[in-house]
Image (cartoon, rainbow, N blue to C red; front, side):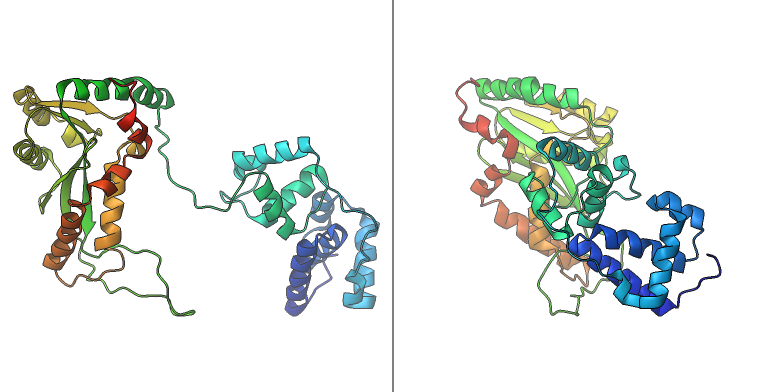
Length: 359
């Protein structure tokens, strides 16, 4: 077997034929072509036999036919009768495997493709679907092709559930009883080199955005009010630290009358000794609660930052820092007059806005 050598053009053609076989769901052709490709790659006979569970004689027969008939030897007549299909039980198993991810099923990838799922179905159930039908099958099973998102591996599901079912209703009830303003606070940095996003462009000509390459950012502290959608923000060139955060909190207190309840995440400068002392000094007007750790999705203002970047920095070029500041401030200025849009950012909390059960 090791003496047999295919030309590079032959191996390339075999790979093309293999792709066609996968598309039409021709299991027999897939096996034969895969074996021939492995021979072309000078793989050992033992490896080929173990991977494809075929006999030595079968391999030599396929090789002999290919040598004599070339590409005509690869054609198979369509099998009679209806194509095989999966049972309801098999479909449930398939759905569970897909949700577990490719790595859990033995694939060296974190992304499912229709060809991989086609192979999974073939390995597990000996049914070789056309890969285009695989996509239809997945849609029927409730799946869609979508972009993944990051979630922290430090998530505490129990703490998150306790927050949403116990802590949040209690905080909301307290705010209503006190007539307090209820703010979600956070901060974001807007880079001088802008940010990239999808846009329409001429085919073959990827849109390009100039950049200075300077690593400088405009820092913004912000807070949005749960009941009214009011936005209060403060920009700075200083680093995010206890002093700059306390400066923003002082500004927040100056802009809002009465009692304030502030919900924040666990950033270090939010919980530093100096910041805690600030909270203690202003405890008559300011009450602070912490979100569950690693739960940015529980802070509605996170979505405000995305809106600002969409309007102010996506695919934008800033030759000087002052132009970045002007663009970001303008976006914030517009948003301060769009309280209805900000209220829509409340998302998972929105049902409580008109919930009479939360007194």
